[in-house]
Image (cartoon, rainbow, N blue to C red):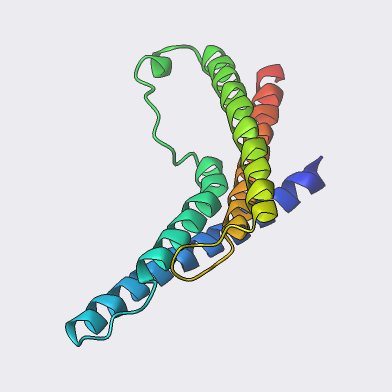
Length: 160
């Protein structure tokens, strides 16, 4: 089990780097597009590319953000409860999230397969949209597996 968690950590870290590259690329592309527009030479398809990079950035950042517990949570009342009850609440909420994000992963994969079969392309650049959907579904899969790892760790914590 620990080997699987190590692979999951490495994958999560790789996606973190991909997310950082996507965010940095959006920044530079937007900068050069604005400067190019000032001189009458905008970058063709820049809005579309920035949108694609934003999709990749968000999908790739989800697993690492969950791993470091960086998502927003309202825990005002939960913090007042005993640690054992907090762990049970964590297991329940993460199980519910795992269920919904597993469904989202599955539906995104089905959507990617449908867009692949239809041959759908982006409007300006003619980029195959299904490639982005596969990246998103992979990011959601790793996110779901990261949640599963958290649930397992909380169950182990509850037993001890």
